[in-house]
Picture 1 (cartoon, rainbow over the protein chains, first blue to last red):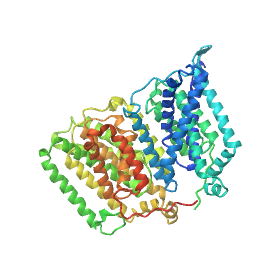
Picture 2 (cartoon, chains in turn orange, blue):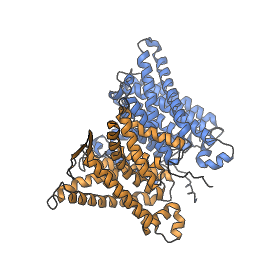
Picture 3 (cartoon, each protein chain N blue to C red):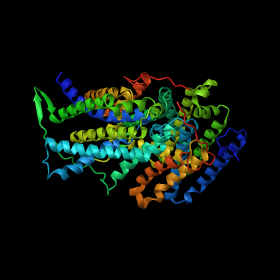
Picture 4 (tube, rainbow over the protein chains, first blue to last red):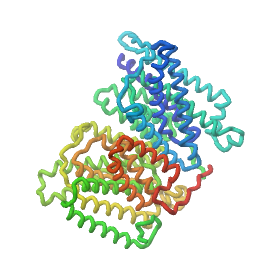
Length: 303
Length: 322
């Protein structure tokens, strides 16, 4: 039973991070209908932004502290939002009317470009760097359970951002425009929605969430390196498909489910070495039995 | 023009057959002299041949049939490991005179196992389209890697060592010629027009009585077979297999060969396979920048010439306004 609750907490913390990343995938898929492979690299850039900002603001705000952590996260999110908008502007916008496969291959190219540029010794280097401590962390003992304050922060931040995102998408003008673009781009344009601006906004928002996820992930990971985004990125994508791609609550649900499944299966001795394959096995199973995802609606192709 | 040079249906199959015979004869003649070649160049020539098999077989799936697969390295791994395991187990029992037969058996086994796995992966996943299919095939490649990493009988994470060196220039180029022949004549045959029909317009093809899933699975299985054969050649060439050698990047390498050469253009894809295999050797002193340049090539190609470098007659596909 203790084992169960311990895995539950670990799984929820991991799943929260997947959920944050999955939101970025699903938002971009919602408006542009393609998988933004470079999303996982924006996550890595977010962690690196925090890595460089933390010592820079150290003289002004002491670290680790709550204000310091908030400032670092805010700046990293802004930088990544800018990077996301830039990627869309430079790489995806010129290809908007091309076949989706062309855009997909370009996205893979952008992802490889960011990864290999960052691995170059003149940029970040391929080695693992220790991530600065942004928040004071303590471990709580609830009976025999061990709960790290970092895990609680991760879950709290995720819930906060989910509520905020829900508010933006459902209650604001720009959110209404986002939903309109994802529903029918041409009709939205005819109604006076500035498509380019909405797509830029979507990329910025998704990339900012990825930056936060990257910082949260780096807080739990032993260190940061240029390929750190690949594994959580692929899992988050699977989470987005699991929940029904293009569906925001679905992405959050998919992220949590995937985090829980991975932690529970990884905790069973004998299966733990297959942990990396589990996410993909789940993906193939969903696509077999419920191709539209758990919360997605299946659509019929019109000619 | 021989039918090999275009993917348009043609009745002159005799032309392709002549090319096949010429290719195999050339391979045999070259292999007679291979002892005189520099070992380094010989190795690179074999690498080129293996790349050609991989690229041409992926071209059947990605180019001619239009199904975007990112898991070709996975099939190569399956074929390579199966073939290597067979020859490792059997080579002490087989007399030297029968070694070529053993090698052939190993290659065929590798191809068949890969084809079988291709069938198992293809039937469920080929109902999906575009990027979904890309992700499922990518996922399959990762699953293969994880499974191999946990299999002690094939060396797990430390790799499979001591595979006998059976691969020669003759074997490689003869098999490359056979691959090109099979793919080129298949897409030029009456049956093979189905692949191109599925690529052009799936809905229209199925309303003409073509079963798109069946054609896609067929292309997938044949592509997987040749990828498995290439894996077998690779295993007996490098004499060492490790699961990390068949990762996502290897699949991307093969995909880029197909894109650079032009989807569905056999000759272009062959040239691209040779160029991209030689490129890292030529750019050895710029090794640090190699992958950065490589990724920029992918992006630039997609922006400027999505039809591939060696394609001349290219009609821009209309974007469906649904």
